[in-house]
Image (cartoon, helix red, strand yellow):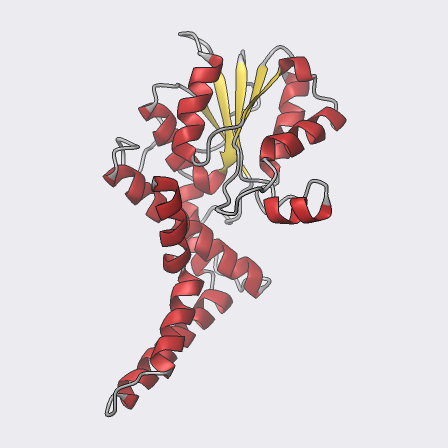
Length: 265
């Protein structure tokens, strides 16, 4: 039920969806004498949308998330395993086209290819079934397995956890699958903005991992002022950041993480 509620709630509180719905409702305000309020609400929604498009507010929101767990140094020492979180596959497009189609989190799938060449002895775990509410969508693992096989990854070293539908289940089910031993060094590969919540979840599950963030979207500095390249990028950055902040809050309130905004230890 948590998964379904999070998807429905997430749709309505997404900034673009919320502001568009506010503008639509306000523009059809049914009460007489409320036209001035209706106009102001509509204007406010449109101004906020425009601000999200032409200012780097998305960058400002993403920087604290993406810089919380910086990438490890080039010399990682011994690596016993690599856990890769799902979410990089566009499931609907992939199902329609009949082949792998990725989204903006594609680096989650690219980085392990290089890592496995550097650490061929490491175990590789992909965790994720489907993040869609639509039944019958092809599982991510099937498409990722084919991609990694074609990229030259030894499938004898790869495991696929194909039941989890959110980050909490990623951690719990992955730990049950690999049963990490004390002292083992596991990397956690996911998008940089998603890393704080992911690290908190894995800590709660008592699965010690080393953050290996990929797919950075911010400049890394809140002082870097710039005009976004496109409305799609600008709105996407805002929505990604808000999604993560709300995810941290929801996971904290429901006991899925013990830290509201975790930091490196």
